[in-house]
Length: 393
Length: 66
Image (tube, rainbow over the protein chains, first blue to last red):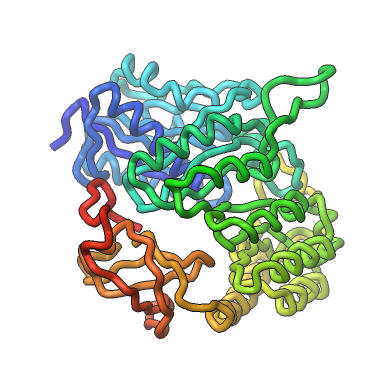
């Protein structure tokens, strides 16, 4: 049985979304709402969506149905990346009352307070993504023993397959001082591990100030951030969630190798092991740079875990291109692969490219790399010295 | 944590997912662990040198899962 001042959350997607859901939940808590488990029945359901997978729409509909099954009179609010990309589409999902875009989601209480249940489509407050210029900090707490700390948002890269810049806007960051203050707050809550999250965290340092009308003023770079965080002695473990290979500098690698708090774990998107496909994807590196980064990490930290994102079936990827990727990854000293099957995303250049790969073939390639990933995992076990610090459980 | 299954799980520094039998005081602890085998789940079994008194956050509330 729900009460009007109760709220439940559902998060789809990445660590960044989890950190933001957690911060939104604290806004409700401060306003006197009681958070309840999703299955318990709440007065308000907040669904934080993702746009990376092509199942976003289907998943969103499913969660809305589940929420209304628990509590038929509940208000349903949809926020997040998919809400920014397709607000009208979501507003027409039966049962959705409110859709908030990237610039509006942290002001959710302003909108919820005036909400009334009415027939017809939901209300939409989703401005142009270019309006999302300010940085809203966030960190997760309470649902896991690790905390995901948001340090950066948005992306200035123009990868030809990606919708994230349209969903989250330009790259912008917190300040070093404020991230350190948040880390201290997290430490005070008893958390022992912080995972630094963002869309493109290696690009940390972008403020909202623009120089000469074009360039963003950069100060306090990612290296400066991790150096300062390393001084937060109450947090024994920091983990970098994911970093672009072209931004994973020698200095960052060397610093992690020398730190007792930053753990030897790197997750770097590769996307393809074919330089032809990397160019089509508009990535900012070639495979040689990626191999160089891996070699540098392993030379400094032989037991480091290196995770890789790969996309298979990108338009124009021939069997030979795919095998280039397969063999490149086979030879590369990495620990696991996150394999994504390419899917066409609206308003990106890639679907217009020549030679799309049949869906069945995309799946076959995904299977091949997934099997390769399984074969990679035991190697790390053999190279890991013991005893090894483990937890937090 | 999978208290209901009698297991706790976590990660090593280098992101190996590990599991071991549940003990109340393990929650939110980071301890030296020796890797001892691989479970059917694919997770790695560990043994840790642990005593309840060595973990001041053993009863920390608000943490339910890893």
